[in-house]
Length: 75
Image (tube, rainbow, N blue to C red):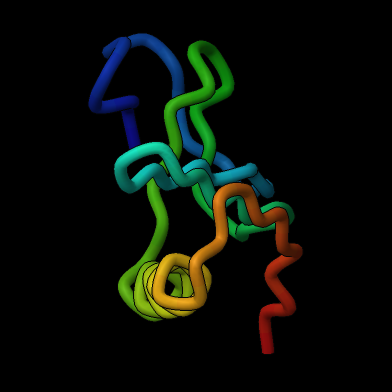
C-alpha cells in the first residue's frame, strides 16, 4: 500500500515507539508492531494494538505519571 502521508513509500511490517502526551505528562511505548513507511517513517497501527496502547497510557496518566516508558509485550 502506498504511504498515506508522503505518497511515495510503501508500508512494511516493523516496530515503532509511540509517544502519547496529556498535559505535561508523557508516555512512551516501545516495540509497538506497526506498518511503517520505508520512505518517511509514517506508521499505521491496527485496532487491537491501538486499544492496548491507549489502555497503557490511560493507566499511567490515571496513576499520576509525569513520564513513563513501557515496552509493549504483544501477545
